Image 1 (cartoon, one colour):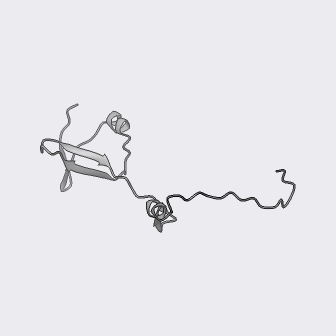
Image 2 (tube, rainbow, N blue to C red):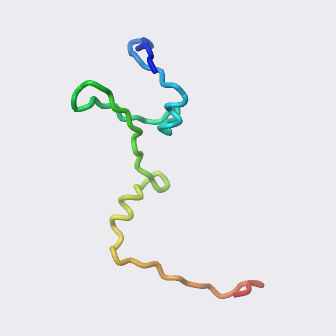
Length: 86
């Protein structure tokens, strides 16, 4: 595919075809990391991996890092309150 560098206001941009976006699983509005290749002859575009937050306050990675490595959840059962069958 060949395309043209186009001006948008004070910036320039390249339009990417829908098939390329689909193959890379890129969607409109995604944050992207753009960098120059080591040989400085191409541009590398990657989606930014957003940190997942819990209720807007904590990152799941930080919460998991504080758990003991040998942590195992314990199962518990409550007494029947109605017509439950166990």
